[in-house]
Image (cartoon, rainbow, N blue to C red; front, side, top):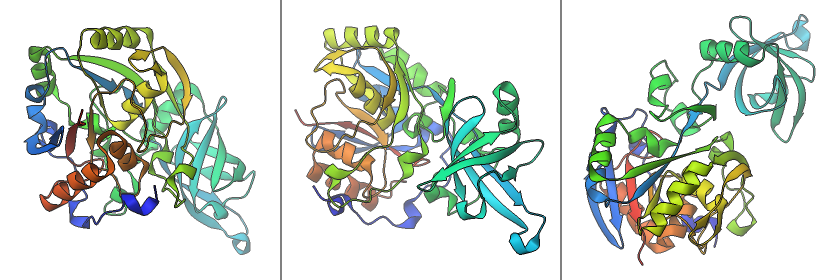
Length: 351
């Protein structure tokens, strides 16, 4: 398939810049084997069956965006320049892969100074990315990052407004437990205590897995033939408890429903064959697009995604291309809010 097959018109007015409150009051488009209906997230327990199992990504977003300055004594050599750093992935000890804007303003071995006592030295750069060595590590680095870092809001929100203190609450799920993501598993942002109580009363179980979402999730697809696209790698874990719970649910005829594309990609990575999942720990670069044979997931709860993105390709793999486009046209026509702070969808493919 071609990249343009996954394009659609989206008015800027439908890009959500703040979540609704309470979280579970967001709209939710319910697609059940070809039928579309307009619901809300607080309806979720009533739309599932006793014995179903939700799989949730319990990663925790770090405040990975830093504002810094590069200083040169000689004004003729550039003087002081402001740069923005977005951390991507932790390396050995106090090193991080990062995006720097503008990267050309910083030379190898130069330092970038942030607020407080935090600074970093550029030790490598290639293909638009950099490697930084910070002056702190461990708990000292984490404390400094919490103090001066900002939540790494997606580009489509950042271009509409500045990040603020409220985002440290809004851009974190109630399940967040393991630090490591530079983007939120956004479908889980809709959950609150009201939803959890309703799910428990309905007999719907929750399984936790961990996938640390990388900044690559926002990178555009640049090839016209989607089969030539190479996914970014992200670290994930499916532990023995998760394997046992998912296996038991499938054996008893329940449905395994990932909450978010990150959870779906992870459990499909851990799948050995249809209906069989194993423990997993490592990096996954699985690319799910139309034609993919789902082995574990029986449905999906997810937000609405960017045109031409790998995420809408994943939805198309689950529902079929024409049905996905029909669903998205319905969402646009009916004023659903899009992307990370937007509304949700609950999707069950035709049998």
